[in-house]
Amino acid sequence: MSSILIIDDDEMMCATLSALVQRKGHSPSCATTLQQGKTLLETNDFDIAFLDVRMPDGNGLELLAQINATPSAPEVIIITGFGDPDGAELAIKSGAWDYIEKGFSIKEITLSLERALQYRKEKQEVLRGRKPIPLQRPNIIGNSPALSACLDLVAQSAGSDAHVFISGETGTGKELFARAVHENSARRSESFVVVDCTALPETLVESLLFGHEKGAFTGAERSREGLVKQAHKGTLFLDEVGELPMSLQKSFLRVLQEHRFRPLGATREIESDFRLIAATNRDLDAMAEEGSFRSDLLFRLRSFVIELPPLRKRKEDIKPLTRHYVDRFCEQHCSGPKGLDTEFLNMLMLYPWPGNVRELVNTLERTLTAAQFDPTLFPQHLPNHIRVHVRRAAMEKNNSETEPSVPAISSESLPKLQDYREEVLNHAEQHYLTTLMAKTLTDIGLACEISGLSQSRLYALLKKYDISRKG
Ligand SMILES: Nc1ncnc2c1ncn2[C@@H]1O[C@H](COP(=O)(O)OP(=O)(O)OP(=O)(O)O)[C@@H](O)[C@H]1O
Image (cartoon, rainbow, N blue to C red):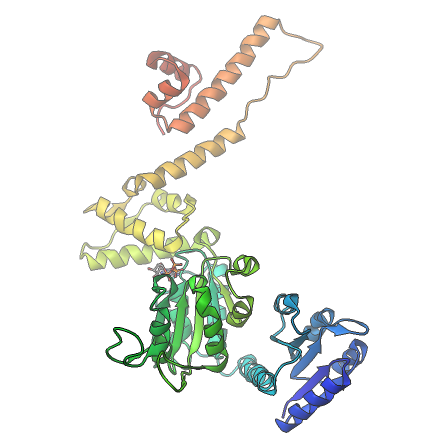
């Protein structure tokens, strides 16, 4: 039996919800003001709290933080005004478990309550710390604090059946982590079904996801099981969920809530008990704000969030990743092990890797092709664009550290104007030439073209100021 708190100033609503809660075998308590609710929360433990937004003594959402801070921290189901478009958004942003509009049906509220209770039960099982199972992470390389925090989340999610939402830039390992969640869950022996939402053809999307009966549409010569059904008892991985067509988001939300759907042309609904993992590299909050992604679906997807950091924010992982992939490629090509020069590793550390781990892996493969039989990898084996980027960034940094300032003079010992002018000129010339060499990466032809200097004059000036002609 669970304890349910109902905070609503409408006494009829309190009575209706209490009766429903009792019928389901739980114990209800009612509060008709926020203050009463607070007092009950201080003296009792609750599993679920129904919370009305508009209360006579304030806004219910303001109580959310306090509810979360109580020892029992019940899951909160917000009751929003009927047709209040901001209600759902506010509830989502305030961190409630669910929201429901006034005027709800008994079926809706029962479903919401049951799901919240199921979620709480699973969460508590995880928190109670059933014997920790060692995490399976065969293909995930790296031990940086940022990556380890994500692996901790994989371990936590392993003990529950909550939907998982993985965000991160392209190539950060979202699919790899989705597989790790599946491999560590109780569903590991069932299928892991990948749906790439960018590759779903608009016209076939429904039939691909939900399946169809023979003759459901022209060309449907045989009935076909959809991807959602194929994930029965296993995991459904929706990659790039931000690309899910708007037309399908509503029906998918329903499938997510009820785990039932009707294949095209079928007369009866079928069931699929899948766990959902969704991934994206897009800003779904911004998409929800501009109306291209349903905020209620986003709310459902985000039961358990893993945010993968970009590689540039966990540079400690670059070295073990490099060692792992270089060894792997050498083994695949039977070329014997290769050493890694310190400068080579330094250069990898200095590059920002906009394509993240995928870009690093591809780069290493290209590098090994360039290195052929050389036993050690040096910066020279790296693709040009990486060396150019790193060198340029270093030179620009040096340069910005030596920004020119007008040479100082004092009123007591003023130099002759001609001497001072020459000193300022030398100073400016030196700065110009250092910047020129950094910009052109010491390409003398290009430097002459930009500066308008002849090659011999340029050389003379570089010599005068002791500026290197080599990068
Ligand atoms: N921590 C890691 N250890 C080892 N390999 C990794 C790691 N992270 C990513 N990779 C590798 O990088 C490549 C890209 O990973 P993955 O496809 O999982 O990224 P993604 O975030 O799903 O990319 P996208 O957003 O473009 O779909 C894969 O080859 C994957 O094996």
